[in-house]
Length: 106
Image 1 (cartoon, helix red, strand yellow):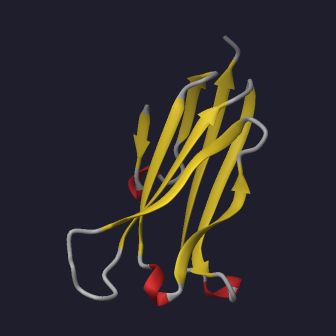
Image 2: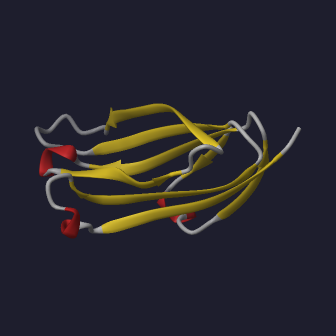
């Protein structure tokens, strides 16, 4: 499994079919801001997990991490782009995470 964070924004990866990618991005949904797909990498990448993991703080409204896992399903090139914005207001985007993935045939 390849693990990525915001510091990997803009990275280009090459991997084989069936390899898994895990992306962990800081998020605080109580503010209305969430990571949203702008490009989902299909059909080369398939989303297998989308969850929120609370941070270590027990304070009300504290943030955590959005965890996204993808499996490389098919050979080809995939563009994965996420925007950190309010769902009701795409113009509120504060950040973006982009990844280009080249998947090779087995």
